[in-house]
Amino acid sequence: MSQEAEKDLEQTQNEEQVEETEASNDEKSQETDPLEAAQAEAAEYKDKYIRAHADFENAKKRLEKDKANAVAYANESFAKDILAVIDSFENALASIEGADESNSTEVLERMKEGVKLTYEQLKKILEKNSIKEIPCEGEFNPEVHQAIMQVESDAHQPGEVVQVMQKGYTIKDRVLRPAMVSTCK
Image (cartoon, rainbow, N blue to C red; front, side, top):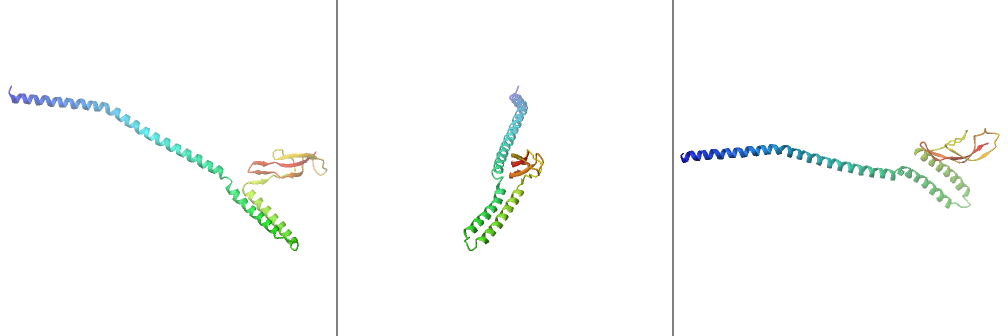
C-alpha cells in the first residue's frame, strides 16, 4: 500500500472513531436527557411548592393579624358613640357648678331636661349597637328573667311578673343581663 492509501485508510478510521464517539455521546446524552429533564421538572415543582407555601404562610399571618385587630377594635364604633354621652354628663356637671341660690330652680329644670336627653341619647346608642331592653310585662320567662322574690298580688296571675327590680338587656339574640323581677305566687 502506498502512503496515500494508508493515510486515506487512517483518516477513514479516525473519522469512523469520531463518529462512533459522537454516536455513543449522543446515546449517553439521550439516556441522561430524560433524567435531567425529570430533575429539572422536579426542581421547578419544588420551587413552585416553596413559593405557594410561603404565600400561604404569609396569608395565614395576615389573616391572624386582621382577626386580632378586628377583635381588639370591635367596640371602637360603640366607644365613639358613648363619648357623646360622656360629653353630655360633663356639661351637666359644669352647669351644677355654676348654680347658686338665685338660679337653683332654673338649673334644676335644665338638669332634669339634660338628664332626660342624655338618657334618650344613651338608649339610641344602645339600640344602634343591637343592645335592647328585655320586656318584662306578663309571664315570667326563665330564659331572660331572674326571679328575686315572690309576692302575693290580687292584680296578677301566678307566675306573672309583678315588679322589675333591675332591667335586663340583650345584645342581638344573647342575654347580656337577665331582668331581675319579682313574680306573683
